[in-house]
Amino acid sequence: LQSGVPAEQMPLPPARGEDGRVIQAVAVRAVLRRLRRHPRFRQLHRQRAGLLRRLDNPAATKWRLVCESGTTGRWWVREMEFHVEGLCQEAHRSFRSSISSGTADAEHVMMNAFDGNTETFWGSQCSGCVPRAAWLGVDFGTQVKVACIKLVQDERSAQQCPQLVLEYSDDGLLWIERYRYGFGKHVIGPVSSLQADMDERLDDEVDLRPSQRSANFWRLVCAVELKRQWGIYELQFFDDEACKDSLESGILRVMSVPTGSFPVENAFDSLEHTLFKTKCGKCGNSSPECVPCPPSEAFIGAEFTHPVNIKCVRISQLEPGVGNCPEIDLQFSTTNEEGSWTIRDSFLEVGTFALLIPKMPVDGEKVSEAQTNLNTMSMFTFVLVLVSAVTVGTTREELG
Image (cartoon, rainbow, N blue to C red):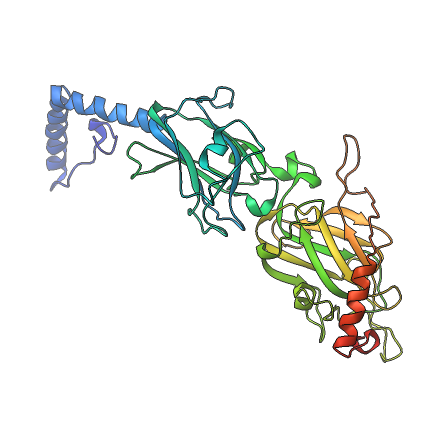
């Protein structure tokens, strides 16, 4: 009964001799046929069938979404709707109370995620939440079957959860997993309809434009040959077009083309007087031989703890003719493997200080060929750099 194997196919204990095995098989199977006609056996069989049907389409009083991946910042949920059918067309809006792992403060309470207003949001109590530390759901007060969830998270990657688990319970103590989302080739974004088969059905590389895709690996690549070492004072990634929400806290590690005595960490230390420089690009008077950087070989970037969508990059580099790259590609990858990188956008005439903001394409535009020059020169920043250089007693010629 427990194995689900028909009684006539149940394996039999060994018997000695061929005749013994035949006699044993006939006898045991005769007993099993009589047993299956017994009322108690039929009752147990019906109970087992009912349990399997319930597990396949469960109903419960409490349902929740658990952030399985963890977060970079706090988990911000603007709206959450539980639907009783798989296309997210029929929300079950009546419930007894909302439930969660904890709330950040009195302004961002649980009910903000169920008030129909995307301007308000629930914020998790934890920041930089470890896996399964943050969760949000409802107590319906009655048995409800949930097949789909509409979820609206914050627009910023740091406040999103990219991997979620739907769970149900009747007592709030024992939770049973129903579905998992975001564990395939689709990254859960700010607005999602969480459906049972989405991980098997959706593939971001096929379904989405580069501008819509998130990835763990991002880098800047110099698209032209360099005969001077590419020198970068500071590099910052942002997940908003205003270049205010830094993703620094979400960086797992930094990476670059081979360097010499100016490591890649210098570009991410928030110090304008330290410098990252490539090892290639030595063609100056002090170099006995010319070792240029071939086009698209020099790069600098980072791996993030969770998939992110870069909306802005701020770069501070050496002046033209000293160690500047005038043409830069912003690229991303989900694996960091050779041949896996995709160009998000390209930037021309990049100056000493620049805000590189990838262009959002309109219908019909070719994404990878969209060229934008959004360089910005800040005289205030320029003065700060000069003051910092004088303070440490180091000129840029000496750094070269």
